[in-house]
Length: 68
Image (cartoon, rainbow, N blue to C red):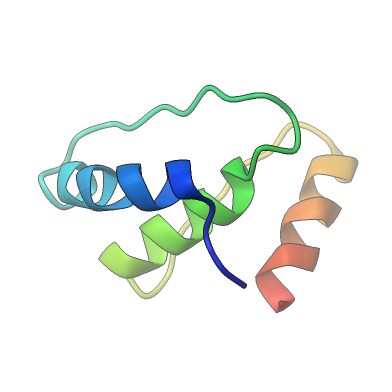
């Protein structure tokens, strides 16, 4: 799976911030790729990550992407 242009532009900056212990918040429209971006960025920093969601639907969307 390939990252979108906006994801490629921001990924290094976000990864650098995470490595420095900064809190990173994403705001983007539904379907823009926040889940994939979060997963790729976080796993570049650590081998395991905690990803919290509010609903079952959000959980199933995330786990489906994690298997891809």
